[in-house]
Every structure is written in C-alpha cells, then in structure tokens.
Length: 111
Length: 115
Image 1 (spheres, one colour):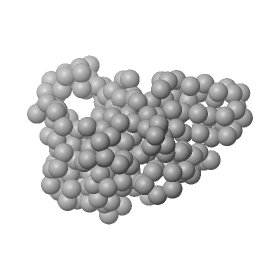
Image 2 (cartoon, rainbow over the protein chains, first blue to last red):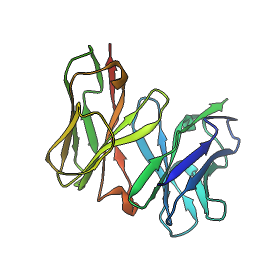
Image 3 (cartoon, each protein chain N blue to C red):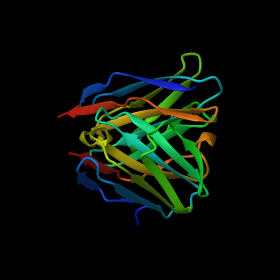
Image 4 (cartoon, rainbow over the protein chains, first blue to last red):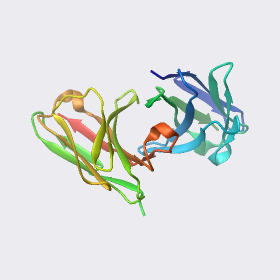
C-alpha cells in the first residue's frame, strides 16, 4: 500500500520568507503525487499535482513542488510567504489503485 | 456555481439519532467519494462510487450507508449516531477514479457534532 509522511505538523514562517513543506512517499509503483490546501472551515483545493511529466511542477498561488524519485520526496515550496497562505496543507500519493493523504502540515505566517 | 455542494454544513445531534448528509456535483464527473476528517485533521476515505456503483468501501461501521440515486448525487446516511462519529465529512468527485491521477474536487464539508 502507498503511504505518505509529512514532516512537521506545524510550520511557522515570517511574511516574505521561504515556505518549505516536506512530503515523503512510499509506493510500489510509479506514483501520482498531489498537494492540496485547506483554508479554515473549507474543503480541500488542489494546489498542484505530479503525473509523471515534468519533475518540477508549478501550481496556483506561486507554489511549486519537485518530484525526486531518488529521495522519494515531493516537497512544496514558495519563495515568499503571504499572510493569505496560512492554511493546512496535505500531500497525497496515488498508486496501485490506492490513494493516501498525509496527516497535514499547518502553515502559520507571521507578520 | 458551487462544483461540489453538500448540506447541511453544520449538524448537531444527539447520540442514537439517524441523520443524512446530501451531496451533489455539477461537474459531470463519474466518481464520487465520502471522506472523514477527524479532529486531528486526518483525512480518510470512506466510500467511492463510480457511475452509481460502489467501488470502494473502507472499513467503516455498517451504520454508515451511502446512497447514489444518480451519478451526480451521493448521500450519506448514518444510523444510531455515536460520540465518535463527530467529525467533518467531505463529499468529493473526480472525472474518473482518482487512481489515474485525476484531481479530486472537494465540497466544503459537513461539521457533524454528536452530543
């Protein structure tokens, strides 16, 4: 079965600082990988996804993620955090007719 | 237009009651899902339907029964509610099943509190 680990349940950055949210996966087949964002009291919204095309994936709101097979990672980054980025972020892995979400990372942005 | 809409958004009910959550998607998708998010934000799939047919039924109590009258609707009925059922329930849909890398579109959630 697939699995995904998000390192750090809570990440805090200052406004304008680099955002780095970590995601490592385990999959017995080439995976599809997703990042979703959940704003308070809302559903999950797709940020970006990797489906075996380019390894560097650009998403909405200035986020991007790089698929690194050798490291089994799919970390999410944004060069400069905005206050509006404060939310819960979920990494997900799909493979072998199975989809798993990570436990989520709460991003706090300090003024 | 809301792509995946679910009602009610908030529901407070007593133990032992039976309740339903309704879901509709207007995206023309073939596959619909119910997810449960617990108080620690852990998200777990409960059911998946493809064209009104059940394709995923994770280990959930049989007090939970999904019903799909057509491919645009997937309702969740819960019998004999227990305190542990308190959670946020998300309805979702995708073009085909999520295993081909299709994006899942989520509703805004239904906050269920059992007292």
